[in-house]
Image (cartoon, rainbow, N blue to C red; front, side):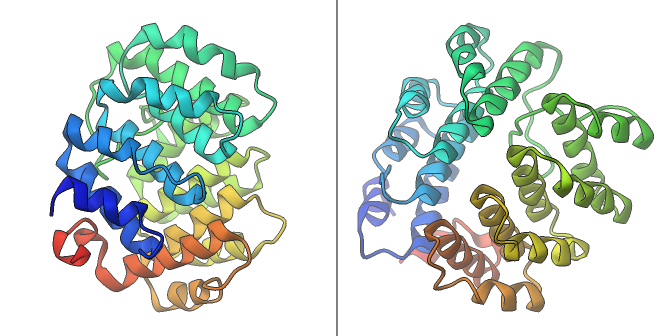
Length: 285
């Protein structure tokens, strides 16, 4: 499939959201500047899910030509905060400390998921020289480098008042992926930070640990929970892919909340097609 065809699929109002997402990840897997620039053309301004996914993928690809575009998303007052946060977070992956002064203004943003994303991006940029730019075992570039130390020390970091330390511990527990790690992370849903809670849901999806299913269902079904957290829980349930997870996702296929409805459809798409083939060209034909 050509890059132009992938862009066409995303731009078309006739394409279902799960196929649009596959088209985005197809472009991500090409991992070229041409594909990254093509992703910029895919911004919908109507689907927060798709637009935030584009910002995330651009951060994963780390093509420097897209830095101005990511800043334009972050600075656009008409863009949903979920997309803006993802754009700021993406900038933390570029290993260029000259970006820090341009990210610093977001530290004062009144919306916490934006200001906290700026803290994380700056922290990562300040630390990259002492850390290798390697993908995690889940093939992702993360908003923070994993904590290095003991389980007990990681718990202390997770209980810190600093968002950047919480994130380091979070990725330590993700990589551990044990029963005890799931239990620690689950307690994080009591934290006040929407950003942290959404990241916990996200890493549960990466871990694909069935022990997290009940916790994620509770998060998804909590109508007082932030949309950024609930939508991430929906996609995580799809990634884990148990029968119980699928049953609960089906309840949201017609949700009045667009990002939940789309996330449920994407989650069920993952369940039905096996995440290992998520960007397989054949799925897009």
